[in-house]
Image (cartoon, rainbow, N blue to C red; front, side, top):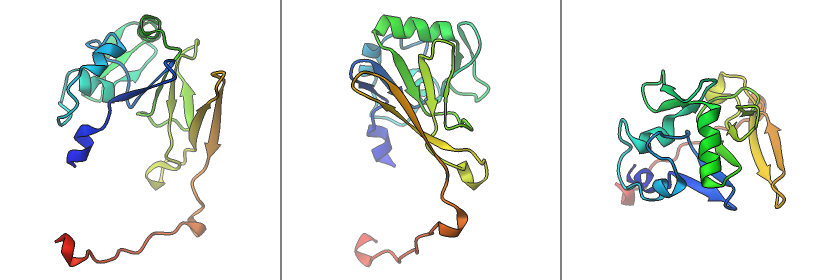
Length: 165
C-alpha cells in the first residue's frame, strides 16, 4: 500500500488538459500549487490533497460542502476561473459514477467525468468510456459494456509461493 502514497495526484496532457481523480480545491488555485504538494504521504482527511481526490463538480455557484464528508463541491464559475488562470481547456476526472460512461458537467464543456468501470460492482448496469483527444484537440468518447456473464472468466487463485512468505 505504500506505493499508492507515491502516485501522482494529477497529470497535464499537452499543456491543455488537467487529469485528476476528483476535482479542484479552494487551496490550490494553480497547477503550480499542485506541483509543490508533498505527495509522499497517506491521503489526509482534509486539505488540498484530499480535495483533489474527492471533490466533485455541481450545479452551484462557487464552493460548497461535499455530502461525502471529504473534498468540496464546486461550480462552473470555479472551473472557468481555474482553467482560464492555468491556460487549460479541459479538466478530465473520474471520481463519480456516470451511467453513460462520461459526462460533461457544464454548458461550456470544460470539465468531464470519464468512468471506465462498466457495470460497476457487478450491479450498477452502467456503461464505461474512454476519452480520446487527438492532436487537434478534438474529443471522442468510446463507450463499452461489461463482458457478458457467460464469457467472464474468474482467474483461479494459485497458492503463494513460499519464497514470498
